[in-house]
Image (cartoon, rainbow, N blue to C red; front, side):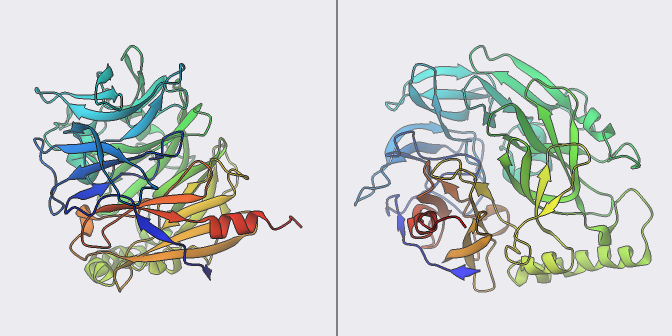
Length: 445
C-alpha cells in the first residue's frame, strides 16, 4: 500500500452547525459538478426524533467561503443515510432534488423539489434507490428496519408486522415514480425459504428478519440487497441476493458475513464478506471449536471496540476480505486486493472518467488513534493507495458514528466525504487527481 496524501478542503460552512450528505451509494454532485447536496442540523449527539427537522440544500464545492443554499426540510432522516437525498433528472432535462419526508400524519413519502424549494412532484412512498432513467424506485419497510436496525430506520415509524418473523406482505417493493404505484417484488417469507443447495430451509425460521442496502446495477436492470437476521447465538447473518427489476426468481449469492458492497459491472459485485465457518451456520450443530469461537467473539467484543475495531483481526482470524462475487449461478468467487485492503469499508467504483470501473474508493473504521483511513485501489495496476487518515471524536462512534462514506464525482477527479474531524459534522472534498490522473498517463504494458 503506497501512502499518497491528497489535498482536502471543507466545503460546508464553519458556522457551528452540522453538515453531512449520507450514504456512499449516491452521488452528491449535480450533473454540472457545481452544486453538492447536503443535510444540515443543529445537534449531533443523539438519535433524531420524529419531530426533528433536517434542512436540505446545496453548497458550491469550489467556493472560497462556503455558503449553504437551503432548498427545503425533511423529517424522515437518520445519521447513516440521511433522507436518501439525491439529484433527480427527468427526460426533458429538468434537474431537481429528491428527498424522503413525512407529512403531518406521520406518513412517509418522497418529494421532488426545484432549487427554489417548490415541490414539483410527490411519490406516496419513501424511496431507497432509483433507476438511472428516474422512472422506477425501490423501497422497503422503514418501520421494520427501525425496529430491527434502528440506525438505518426512521423514528416514530411502526413495523406493520411486529409479530411476524418473515411476513409475506413485506420485503422489497418497486415504485412507479410517475404514478406512485407500489408493487411487492419479493417477500420476506420467500427469502427465508430460499437457501443454498444442501442447506436446511427455512434459513431463519422464527427469527425476525429484515432487508436493507438495496442497490441497482449500473444499467438499472437488476438490484442487490441484504436479507439479515440475528441468529440464536447472537451472530448477525447476512444473505446477499439479486433480483430482476421487474421481479422474478431471487438469486442467493453469498451467506455469512456480508457488509458493504458495490456493483463492479452488471454481472459482478465487490463486497467485504466472509463465510465465517469458525462460527458455524447458526442452524446446524456446532463443533467444540465453533462453540469456543462464538463464545470468544461475544466475550472479546468490548475489547475489540476499545481497540478501535481493528478489522485486521477479522481479516486474519475470521478470513473476512474483499471478494468479487458474480451475479450468476455456481460461478467462482474471486479474491480482491487480498493482503492489501484488509479492513471493512464503504467501497465504490468510479462510473466516469477516462476508465470507468478502474478505481475502487473505500474507507475504514477508526484506528487506535481515532483516525479514519481513506483508500484508492487501482484495478488495472493492482495497486493500492492510502490517500488520507482523518481524526474523529470518540463520542461520535457506535450508532451515532460519522463514517466517511466516500463518493466519486462524475469524472473520478474528486472525492466527497463526511467527517467530524473538527468535532462538528462537515462535508469535505478530496482532490485525487494526483493519483488518478498520474496513473492514467502511464502507458499500458
